[in-house]
Length: 112
Image (cartoon, rainbow, N blue to C red; front, side, top):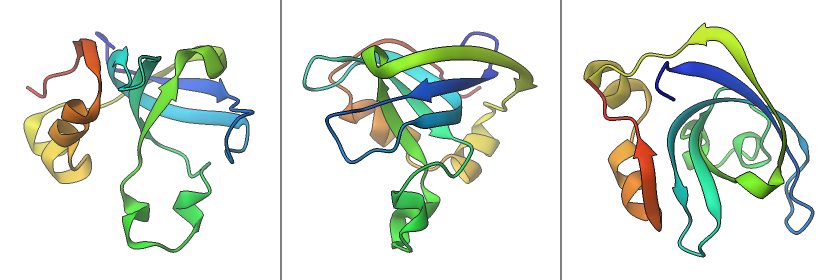
């Protein structure tokens, strides 16, 4: 997170209707969900999500929380992501709302 590096994770959730697979993500926060599970809050860069292909109005918003116990692979890329206030407010909408929806935050990116 500190270096704003794009990551690739392999996510598998056998308890939900979520397809296992690789996701390319920008990690904005690390903490716990309201259910108490350790999670990362990410912007999903690729379209590996059923909801993104559903045609619903919220499809453009690609914020996702991923439980750490369901990430089986994690690797850094050489790409960095922009966290300037202008970029985040324009291209990563509702970030502050998502922070408030987490149960607790250990670390987060504050747009500069």
